Length: 405
Ligand code: C2E
Ligand code: MN
Ligand code: MN
Image 1 (cartoon, protein in one colour):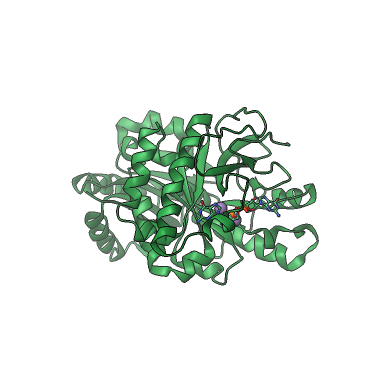
Image 2: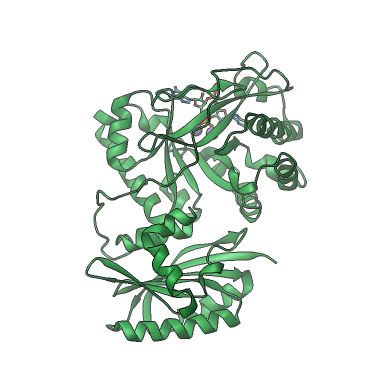
């Protein structure tokens, strides 16, 4: 049964008192339970945001009904996509957060969950599970879905708890694999934790990805691209990387090879990894030029629990219009926009807009190709917390590099 997730925002038609909203949410809880739908309702005194998760057809049918409800207007669909598993199932079927005078108060519509919810609190929601839905709720609570929206505050992007820093010797060669990968960390320099490691294709003598991929064409290219990833996963598993692993794939590789996602899942499982630990990076350029393949690939990956990143954002031509149509879990801003940002006004304006947009949409932002402290400092102040680049570590051939914090 395919599950889907839908998040919408709307504005209350009337001034609602707290008791009224609580009563409404109790009614919704029962309605949703009957429909096998879980989720959460948030109200800030003026706007609603609701998360609905459940069987696809039931969610769609309920949303159609909700849209006709006269108690709210300005209904905006924020997220609508397939999901691998539910996030809100153990928290009851519908609860509500009311923000009074900037303070947060959580009232459960399912009384048995009261204690648990008070403990969780809105601030903790994001820490429990870094899903897009919880990140979007966080942005909502900070006023990003109000109209006109409030300006960026300095509490922007709190650090999320990350995995422990792995310890590996520098550039150690495993020398066991027919294809090789260099691993480059993506780091959060504030919490000094590694977010993930990107596997970059290499030849036996450290040849570049372009050199290796150019030896193949047609279906062979896609087959090689996909099948080489089993070695990336194997090296990552052998190194015992305690962080997420990112691999690069052409969207066509996921479309042209039958059962490509099953192939990946099979390797992930037999290596003792979890699909939710894996990120597939697709470049902005590929996403635009192979539009249908890209959409097909993303749907399959998401349904399998694999996260999707848009790579080299800003290097292609789609820019923000790509985000209007599709929202990845992660967005990697291309080095072209990052290089020398501390002195470049237009780059600053563009990157600020991208950050703001990703924040509202629950997309985590990574700055690619940072080479010096001035770039990192500017980006940290603008709210970026994740970085990849020579400044922190160069890719390490069949190994994991030392990080220069
Ligand atoms: P990418 O995914 O954007 O990977 C980052 C590239 O930027 C890497 O080049 C990395 O070495 C380089 N880089 C990282 N930090 C810095 C920095 O601070 N400054 C500069 N100047 N460069 C930095 P690499 O390894 O040559 O990879 C090039 C591209 O090849 C990748 O770009 C990715 O799009 C593609 N690629 C890599 N592995 C695969 C693969 O397995 N399959 C496919 N289809 N493409 C791959
Ligand atoms: Mn990449
Ligand atoms: Mn890139």
